[in-house]
Length: 215
Ligand SMILES: Cc1cc2nc3c(=O)[nH]c(=O)nc-3n(C[C@H](O)[C@H](O)[C@H](O)COP(=O)(O)O)c2cc1C
Image (cartoon, rainbow, N blue to C red; front, side, top):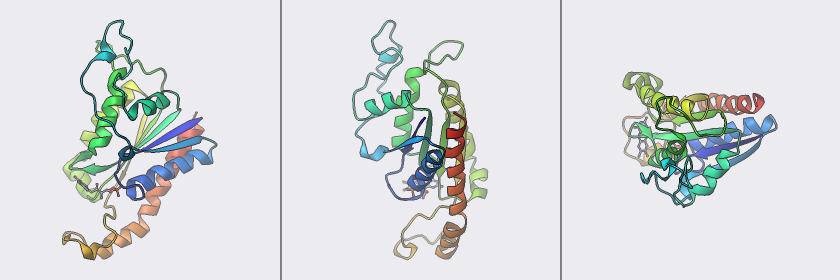
């Protein structure tokens, strides 16, 4: 049983990475082997639309033909049992690195047929973790969920069941007094970080444990 966690934040020890690590801890607590990958350590691009993955009788049919740092990671994912994908919200969506990663992960397995077939070799659960500055109320009001549902639906069709955790109102700066950020109340932010973020981490731990237990 192997669970791979992908950190789609440039920061290796902040909100997103901490959540992904906690989910991996949860999986490990149930006996899974774990691996954490930081996308920003890798040199890669998104899908280049070469369509080698769709070429009839092509040697890369169903596989991404691009060769870069993501190539071995995509091969590893074919053999793991669950994925945890974490990303901060950047301008209303996942980071560019996470989007590029998802293009390369999902598109090669997606068959252009009327049945919506998948070439992924089996079903595997995916946990999405999104961290963001907006409050829970604003998350609903802006309707970010709808956007993420599109990705979830696609991942469900192509790879396997999905679970999503939203972490709102995150603590963004090491010291709010150093930055122009009058929109935020530093004390409220710190309070939430101390009181609510630990509960978010518990949810991540449970998610990882649940993925490992159900396999
Ligand atoms: C370039 C950039 C764009 C952002 N855009 C949004 C946004 O659209 N909505 C939001 O709620 N938070 C936004 N944020 C805040 C981050 O999503 C939030 O602080 C997140 O928890 C950071 O994750 P990290 O600590 O793992 O880096 C943005 C931050 C950056 C740096």
